[in-house]
Image (tube, rainbow, N blue to C red; front, side, top):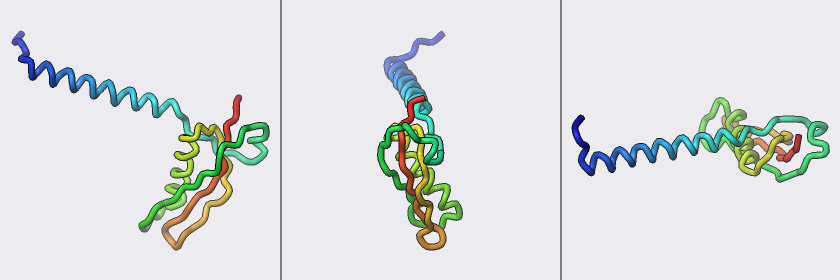
Length: 108
């Protein structure tokens, strides 16, 4: 088996470190699940965290509702929310809009 020179070993170590880093980030992202979308009755006894708002952004988006809701869900997840209650999903023009929800932390 041929011997690797120092540059090759260094490059190989860097690639391995990068792969491990990406895998760790992926695992960390999976640890935070998407908050459950529920009704007011289902969050009785839960702790209110904050109000979150998502937007579809600017552009002609056929699925503006989905994009706006995903944006709000991401913000709720970043707060540590386990549940959200939608307040309003409203268009802004024809192809854009916003989604507003209350974020809660519910201990099972």
